[in-house]
Image 1 (tube, helix red, strand yellow):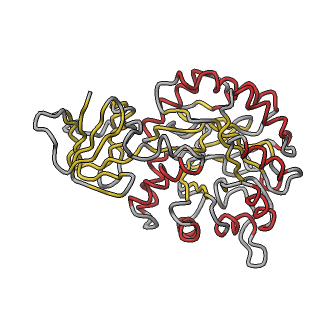
Image 2: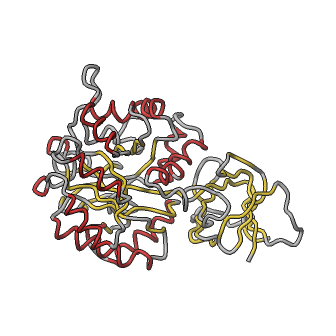
Image 3: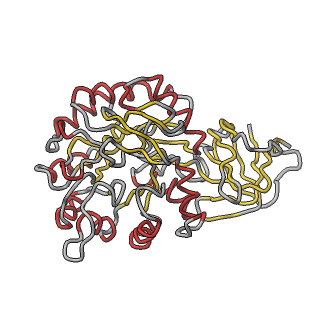
Length: 392
């Protein structure tokens, strides 16, 4: 079935266009037209609105009172469906540091069930840990920290049916070089995180094939003028991506702007690091094995340290525009195309391009989300939406 989406502005693969009409055929994106090619065409009317690619969250632990580490398929389904309200159409369920046995069970559950979810599409697994160091542990359990192990990764791949897409480690651990090369050769993107590494150690890890800095500024050695550390590496090394959590708690807007200016907005990735309290009232929750209190928009451990976030990815897009540090086009790119490129799935999602699944979102000019579509079908509509947009 062929249909056309009418809107004022479209964030397409090759730039911004509109007003006009975007063709959708059999659940896939087709061509863009300035004028409707047929007067009898079936039109989904979003006049006055903007159409952007579905967002891609490559770092998210939970949502709607469910955590990936609960090892529950029902929880995974609830996260997948809940993320449609955030404009997220593709994501990587993200684990926390735990025992190899527990991680075996979690990745096996995801690998066996990811095709069965009905909401946001699961594109792989992100293993955040256990190859970290204690100084910047964050909300990770140091009891299970260890040096990178090729055998452990191979076992996780076996249990998950080769569904591990991304794994994070600290560059100063022993055996990092061989591990990175093995992971990259097996199509696993290596990220750097929870680390007190020097600039030189981070540079060596990138030379071996690591290509993402996880939640830049948080959980890593800072920038000093005589030792640039992990933050300096995230800003300066070529051909890497830098994640950032733009909730107003993790990173000051000015620091986020410094990173975007240094890294470039096409290599900066907006992530949420959202935990189970996302989409829920403030109160007490869990992040893996740790109790967390959510208050005043921030999730914190009993020590006071930040413990993930309750950020929704569509809010991050709006925040960076409201802060004056990105244009709408740049913000959307950082939460969709850059995200997909960072883990090598930009051939299947993260942009509006001919032949891609018609996963897209509808925004007001103020960047408020009004609807989320999967495969050309509206799967979420914001309650505040008037409903005047519709089929013509």
